[in-house]
Image (cartoon, rainbow, N blue to C red):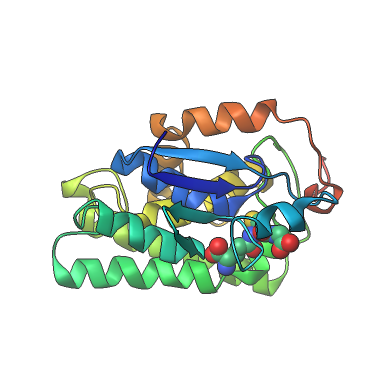
Length: 221
Ligand SMILES: N[C@@H](CCC(=O)N[C@@H](CS)C(=O)NCC(=O)O)C(=O)O
């Protein structure tokens, strides 16, 4: 049994759960998992046994409960001695900026294109707000890759919490298309999706049988 327990939702749908899971796994921090299926009559009772905010993810470390994905990721980086954020302060500040931007924003993309790892070839109606979210993600990814390619394949060269934060976006683009993404952003998306560290999560997501109608968005042409 590990000291840490991460409480997560369905692997196929729970983008907020995936983010800290990917970071903890990249950091090599051992942790146990408790999966609570979303949108079931018992979800609320089950999650309240672990986390006061009634949402997944939550991280338990002994008596401490950390909720909110970004706070869990900060805590994980502290446990890992500062790994998980870039070492240089200005670059670390930028990584925190774009990670926070993801945590707080992109609401149109998140609402109209829910993460659905199994889904392929879905199409959703385009809108100026959706196009603006995609354009901003393209700008973030492209600018990071342009400046940090010499240090490695991730947004800031080495893998960081910012990569974990944007990982569900790569799955969304895989499911619903990514019209408007430039070459550097497409290359980064391919790197994120091919990451061997997340392969067990993807395999388990594909094996899940629960289907949530509210998350099954987008017509297949
Ligand atoms: N801001 C939170 C969002 C967490 C969240 O919305 N989780 C969803 C699943 S991905 C949830 O628990 N939904 C169940 C509910 O709200 O009842 C975070 O960053 O962790």
